Image 1 (cartoon, rainbow, N blue to C red):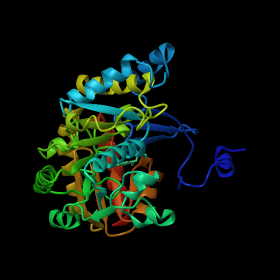
Image 2: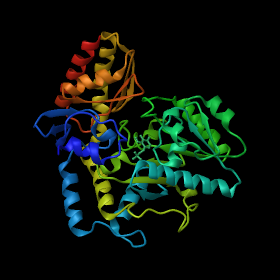
Image 3: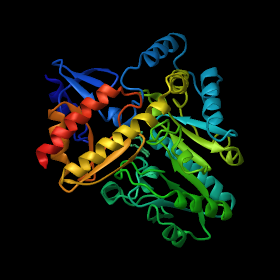
Image 4: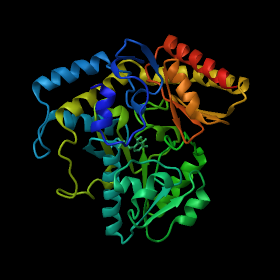
Length: 392
Ligand SMILES: Cc1ncc(COP(=O)(O)O)c(C=O)c1O
């Protein structure tokens, strides 16, 4: 039986899959089983921030696997302690971390902390944003205010209100005496790479502090250098009270984290939350290596430098091709919003061996590996130009 027939027969049909069967990856390239080489401008849905199979990640995966892969969370090991310290040192300076395995789980941990905090002060409402994306588990889905994702699973969690992203007055209208937390992505990723102003974030921060509302940032897509800063909130000159990380944290290995400011770090007590696999030695060793590589290989600097070039190129496409409605982005997270359906463009790019993403019908999303080489970035953009030209 072919691989695709096995998929058809044995896998739940929850994904729209495309293309050939892939067998190998290196840097910003993927190879299929026939040896054809693809440029990957959307590696791992934003996960493979260091490209595919970074040699140092491969090395630590192998060496740590030989020593200790997994022990439960009622025992101590050094990798979890060291990774938590690294995350806190690079963010809040004082705070604590809870480790899980996927993005949605980190969001769940944040929502549970918010609920436990709310209980203390008799508040129970959480505000999320229109067009948000926080994951598919029921709690995270309840804060993912998109009809297409929520409709089949209602009723979801109660006491969740939805505000317009970037609209501070609308947020204020949704706040009540019972609001305990607000959760949002600093840049909405899946929702189409949507931005809010610095002023909005400053107001949100001030208002949340004044009204004892927890400010939760979901940095699962934007964290770990995606925007040219280690964490996206650093672009806005504010700090959230809690933030989530996943995707890039393991550079391909599953791990996620909820990072909590010192002030709120005693809310979850022993037994209130847990994860069997969360923060095991193998996952944490990889996470630690990701931080080291980001520093050693000047990954943030690479994003900042190449962003200028990428922005220039995409702006030029926008001027040249009438099918482009708008381009927007920061660092290495970009949307090309089209006046036509994005699916055919995405497929044409794929045919030309360039992997990108399409979201919300008309939006092409590109999120290259943060260490992509100039020549590969150039080559991928040349293909994209050719494809956009075909549709213009
Ligand atoms: C901002 C954000 N939050 C949460 C998630 C969910 O992560 P996961 O699919 O690992 O549960 C995603 C995934 O795309 C995301 O982009």
